[in-house]
Amino acid sequence: MSLADAAAGHYWTIAADLGARLRPRPAPADGAWSLEVREARYGHVRLGGRLRRADGDTLVVVVHGLGGDRNSPYMHRAAHAIAARGWSCLRVDMRGADGRGEDYYHAALTSDLHASIAACRDFDRVFVLGYSLGGHVALRFSTEALDPRVAAIAAVCSPLDLGATAAAIDRRRAWPYRHHILRGLVRMYREVARRRDVVAPLDVVKRVTTIRGWDETVVAPRHGFASADDYYARASVGPRLGELRVRAGWFGTRHDPMVTAATVLPSLQLPHPRLDVRWFERGGHVGFPDDVGGGRSLEAEVLDYFAPV
Image 1 (cartoon, rainbow, N blue to C red):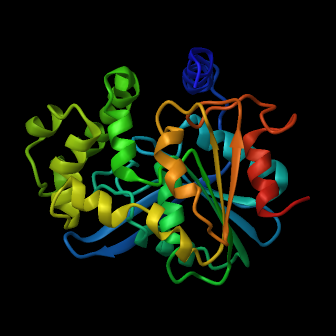
Image 2 (cartoon, one colour):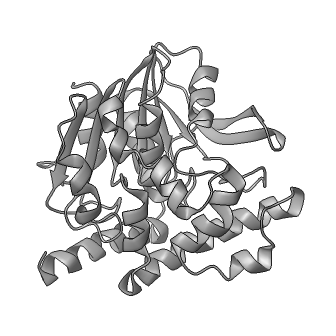
């Protein structure tokens, strides 16, 4: 990758997010959504989100990335594209991301996605769109026994090898992204620590400076992994792409500074009958120009993948 390509990847990663925050575009009108699921450690955990109902029988469930939530700028972009298509949209918060302090998620925690879709009984066709780590969760979800209404999933800029991706984000030159992610994760953990028993004191967690450190200190002990390496080995979806139960699309850019091409190519180069791969030459991490897909937005390309107009 040339310096110009690398700079462009950083630009689209930062500019898309910054532009949306400076000139926010509210999501289409929707309503509060919540669900309580059973959980072994805490007995129950509430999930939150926003549901916009449209005429018709199609629902798109949109899942955010690590450190994000239902109001991340790309989640709003997806909601607008889905509304324009005339479909219903559920922007679901991964466990704990809604700030309620119920618990926190990891990259292979698919049970909440299963429960969320099962609760949306009045839709006959369901698609799942996941961004970054949310796409990893969606891909893991699609290797499992599925509700027959699930027709396809899409993963945008999503990691496939969790260990390789953590190492890429933990590089010195990626510190702004790492700082941004960890700030959101610590904020989530703080809320959990206020009302639940947690695996590490908040002061210890606040001193974590790497993604691997977060996974070693917080994720692994909470969710039954022996270590960060054990978590990466058991949770990564890359080795399981041959087990996909439904049509799945992976969308990304070769200039993503966070989920780098080098971390996903080993998994994508293997033959996977149900996996479609789409590379874009422009864009960064979950940030793309509006005309990235031959004059069309990334979200329009994804929705066409689900069901061409």
